Image 1 (tube, rainbow, N blue to C red):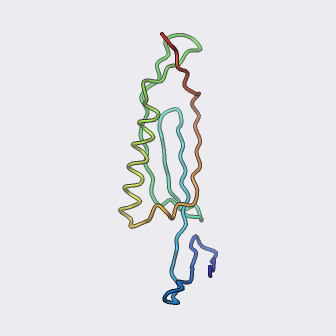
Image 2: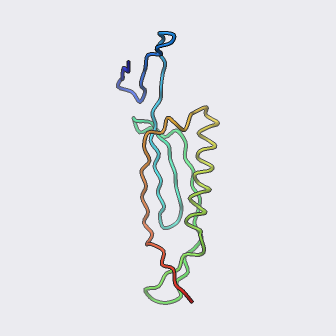
Image 3: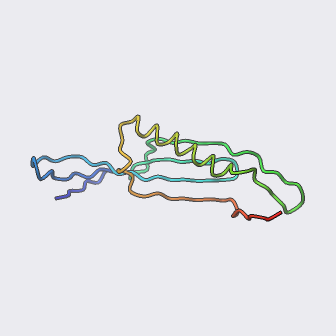
Length: 116
């Protein structure tokens, strides 16, 4: 049996012992913008539980209308931000299974592979 309250928590009945237990729910947001990769975990009321930011390397602009992002910096920065975020989340004693959904926003263009 599941009973919801108006907060960001759900109570469920443990059938083995007949006790009510608390199950927290969280959401994760990932934003890769022009200057950084950001990741945030917050509760269903919008309260930030933990967050991490990893700055991106500067874009190279060798000519008008041409921008080159160095190497795998976007991917590397995202991985580092998520590694920091999940470490902080676990230090708080939270379980990754409590994350109900992940939203992703990326403002960069897609990568094009060019054969030289």
